[in-house]
Length: 446
Ligand SMILES: Cc1cc2nc3c(=O)[nH]c(=O)nc-3n(C[C@H](O)[C@H](O)[C@H](O)COP(=O)(O)OP(=O)(O)OC[C@H]3O[C@@H](n4cnc5c(N)ncnc54)[C@H](O)[C@@H]3O)c2cc1C
Image (tube, rainbow, N blue to C red; front, side, top):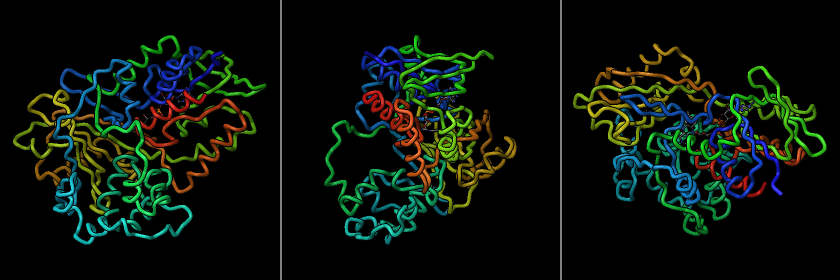
């Protein structure tokens, strides 16, 4: 008999959990969402001229089960232009293309000859972690070298986690690489020897016809009977193997009982929910996870002969370059329909754990900093036709050096309240693909 299941939060984690549960035959699902619309941090902006995202921009997919889900939802997948395979990093204020083949690796100016040798000979590197908990920085510094960390890992972590490799745990941020080293003594050796995941497909970047929100719209239609919007969960009680959930909508409190609860509320909001007394300290521990602030500035400008400078996916700026911006996404180069033909549309990222205070500056100050940096990088004055900002006070959970303790806390709460399960970007990876795969596992095992 199917269980009565509550899913709290209707971001991608909540909706995809509900989708898979329904697919596996469970129809007693209630998704409770505090906002007026579903989607969590997924937000697509559509106007007569521009199409862009103010949250996640693209999905990177390498698992056939995720593609199957999109096909089941009849989503119209949109692939970026082939040029989007070009990614760039700034080095000594020069734009350098990230190598994507062995030949381009040998030729690249991104790394010195010494670093290239270090990378090629990683196979023979017998070093072992010195500390019990190793940071992303220390891991790559040990297996490769400082230049590799500074010009590859540091910008990559800023662009994905809004984070700093010195503060993040290799075990939680790159579990595959951590395990390969542990098992085979080398990352490259591990890649050659490990068993192939049967769901693995060639990694591809994608969005949907009208942006990422299409995914949310399709899931919402599929689950229209199951979602309660505008209802903030304020209390979760656990008694006699049943969960009592209290939520507030339009100043009215409602109580519902469930057999199981899947909690997808981000940890920076979890302390707003009242739990049984015994759990209060553990929940407090989870609420300490750091989500750095970030500001995304989307702007468009007339090409004036500069179009080719923005051909690709985007550029990342290493910390050592001492700029204000973390990176730039080349939206109109990725997707032709995102801006008029004679304009270039880009999104610039500022802040993160590298410079959290910058993200909090007012829009006018940020705009000035950005335009100054763009001038240094691209060599001309960008004159925006259109500009808009989106501030995320709490962007992405940082899997810090203490993260194993946070995982232990989650597991211990799940043991205290059998039937309560955590699911969200605070566990097993932050990407949308990770979130969908986590949800699939939860739905299978619930
Ligand atoms: C700015 C930004 C850019 C990103 N870029 C990318 C990218 O390009 N590619 C990629 O793969 N990933 C990206 N990510 C990561 C990815 O978007 C997230 O990991 C993912 O969307 C998180 O989904 P979620 O459902 O776990 O959480 P959320 O989207 O945060 O959803 C949680 C939901 O819970 C609801 N909620 C909270 N409290 C309550 C309550 N008390 N009661 C009821 N409901 C509640 C919220 O309203 C929300 O709808 C980005 C993230 C951010 C913030």
